[in-house]
Every structure is written in C-alpha cells, then in structure tokens.
Amino acid sequence: MPSYRAVLQITGLRPGNAPERVMEAAKEAVGSLHLVEGDRLDVVKGVPQITVRYLVEAANDGDELAAARAAALVMQDAVEDVATTGRLQVLRRRRGAWVPV
Image (cartoon, rainbow, N blue to C red; front, side):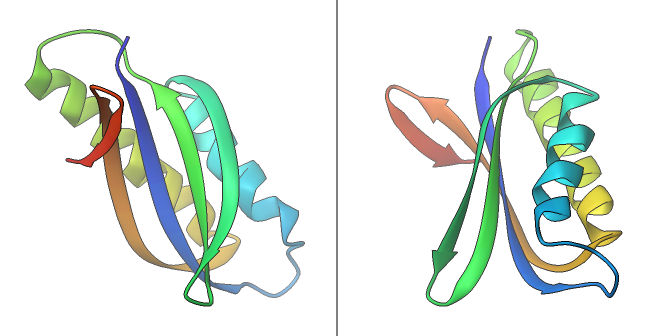
C-alpha cells in the first residue's frame, strides 16, 4: 500500500483548545479514512507544522492520489476546528524519498 504524508502548517490555536488537540484532530480525521502510520510535530523557520503519515489502498496512481489528497483536506478541515492553519502539502513515498504530489 502506498504511503503518503500530509504536512500542515499551524498558525495559531483557537481559544479553548489545548495544543495537543491539534494532533489528535488530525489523526482522528485521517484515521477515519486510512491507516495512520505515524505523526510528528516540527517547527520549520519558526512555524509549527504537523505531519501525519498514512497508507492508501493500492489502486491506479490517479485514484491513490485522489484518496491521499481527500484525506489531507479532511485533516485540514478537522484541524481548522481547533487551530488556524497555513500551507497544506501532500507527499508520496517513492524509491526512498518523499515527493510532493
């Protein structure tokens, strides 16, 4: 099964939400559609970003990509309930490297 990453910048926390709720919302959203392999929080040039790694059911490239993008958008929508977000990026694992799709 192909492995994807959804990487989302977090630009702020909405009032009344604990910081850990951001990752919880992201994993719950992606996990409702696909198997979540892992997650992490990074700070890149002073901007926090979350990464959720997940598997998409094997199909043709177009269907896999559509499913991966849909999952990333569901994740962003769920995170928007608890935080403000910036750039969303979807990457696919190909030959040992993560490639933007």
